[in-house]
Image 1 (cartoon, rainbow, N blue to C red):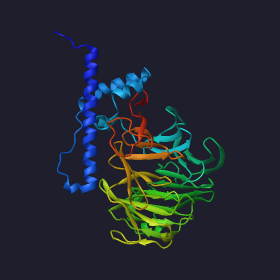
Image 2: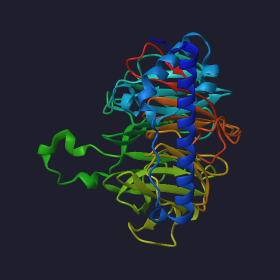
Image 3: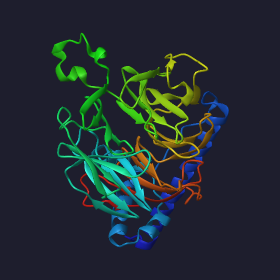
Length: 427
């Protein structure tokens, strides 16, 4: 019986992975381009299939070996990364990558896990990753400047710069031990916006002030509901860059625009089913709010001269807002100087400007759970619920023919930060 030579077997594996991956990417790009230009109702073709799942185990083992042998660059050239073939592994291995924050140069900080899980905090510098204090529950960064907030052991501490001078330390009482969805320090570090499923709070030297939901919303609740009756779903909030406005919302309430002390100054009703995400533009001239229905959603923009006294009706077309997007259920996003970058439930990041013009799209896979961008706007880090962290150089051209999207972005690497793995794997 003749044995297939190892070199020939390797070449067959490489060829199958490469050719099928390229074919799939081309087909998806053509389908999406057609749908965007002509309407999805006019697409008559078949849904593209990535037929490489049977190769996943072998490819993953070779990736591990390449990491151990310091030959990842060569491996990546032969086997460009993919998402779809690894979906069967994600149920057990994946975890959310959240609370990404840019520090400086090629350095960021981020967390794994969600608010109801035990998290781990990491520092990523270039492609070197360092695990941080295991007591850290959440990390936030100011909208302007370099104030960082770290929640750990029942306290929130704010610092002037990463590992910088301590500004203030807040000891939590009512919110001690509660999982933190989001944490945003004010630009001076003397106050913090704290988002949890138990409520949204302003934390200052005066204590913890609940600003959402408003007390009236809970009056008359059945006391037998206990703690579960007060839990929020899809809790979300945003702080304007100049710290003059706060926006809060959850599944069961309109988005509310607040002043810095938490007083309501306007409301924005959902144009899809459930309020899900909010964000201010970089110059604070616009507020966008997203509402969702299953995996889709609608995003609208409200100009800053309408914040005070805003009363946008739910499910109603109006000149009071600009339609930004009518497809995405937005899970994460940021505002660059020129446009928004929004991450959706399907694993796409998309850039759109204040008028709702689509700039580009780029597919990464799984729900997008966090992102941060360098101060010069050239490098973007994106985390997803697949347990993958991607580092992209924007507008530098596609690295390979397997890229799904039209953004011309170069993926420098992705990290597989998976559960039950001996280390973090670079691809």
